[in-house]
Length: 222
Image 1: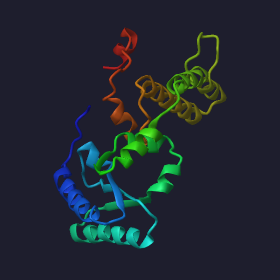
Image 2: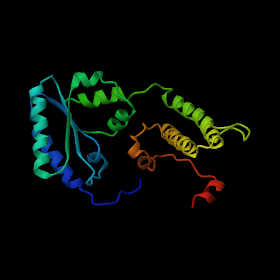
Image 3: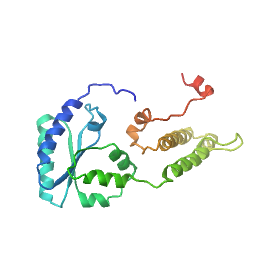
Image 4: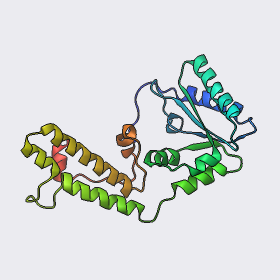
């Protein structure tokens, strides 16, 4: 993994987060608290938030407002962004996760989960069918062939068609999309969910398996 540069405020962020957990976990309706984002990544700079997710065992808007108020108080006091996301557990169980949710919650740190309810929900919602990763590789591969990687030189590509049409911006966009398809394929081959776009390249560095550049490509990429 490439080391992030800049001033790291993670110690300060963790202290704030742990203090909030101490207060919030004392509420009777709170059944789970989870850290996400920089708190889990181990790096927090001026662009980061203190990201905490709280789960309530029963619907109580009064408690939800009180918890959010704690976050707002800390934000005003310390001058850092505090994002307290409060969910009612039963609603969260029915929540249909998208790719970004799967990636985020697969990395989440459960810091308060006395009955293991949150871990159980996460395990269940992170399960995917046996053919999930294979299908992703196959679909991305088909699109890669179509956009920029034909099986033979005689077969045209979407990117190539835009060059012939005289729109280099459209051609460039298609090639950029093809790069994203390749990244999606590599994550799938590692059986890893796809990060949100802003973290996609960074987290690709830490994958267990990465493609090896051929000699031809190595000479073009010093």
